[in-house]
Amino acid sequence: MAITHANFLTQVRNYTEVDANVLSDSIIQDFIRNVELDVAGKVDYDDLRKYATSTFTAGNRAVSMPSDALILRSIEHIGSGGDRVFLEKRDTSFISEFNGSGVQGTPKYYANWNEFNIIVAPTPASADTVQINYIKDPPEFTSTNQTYLAKFQESMLLHGVLAEAFRFLKGPDNLYNLYQTKYTEEVQNFALQQMGRRR
View 1 (tube, rainbow, N blue to C red):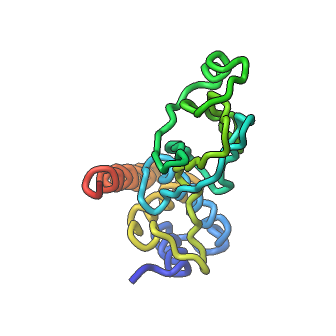
View 2: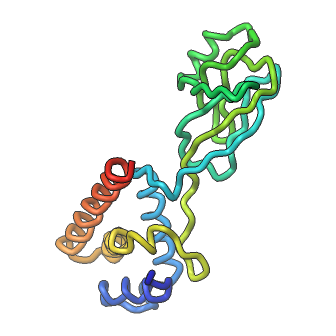
């Protein structure tokens, strides 16, 4: 059975031997979120993989990103016959040089433009389907939301939060190092599990 949010907060306070006056719920929640984002940046795990489909706009090289996208994995062009072709990732300078005159055709390349858009080249000539494969912003473990990490990687989440807590408390270096090392090992093992054994 997965740990409840309230029990997780109690565990953190028990390990650090401080009460809610020092480690308030909101402070521990910040630690939880920091660890969740750190893991999402280091491990490409199944629970965060997502895709969204849209259509190119003929004559417009920009494609909007999904609002919950954290890391872009790949872009696929789906032709009218259903054939799928992955676009190659390039730098924005390559896109500008490759298609400086805005020639229209079937997109072959893409580049990150800003937080909300990518650009493609050649500029789409038709409103074909585009599939954006990405890592979503990880859900937050709260009293009303159970997450994959809290349910299946509780030890990793706990050790990451304890490392954050001891850094915050300016606690003994040996305890900070212990929890940081354990957290790092568990993140590496989780990455191996996700990238190796499950695929």
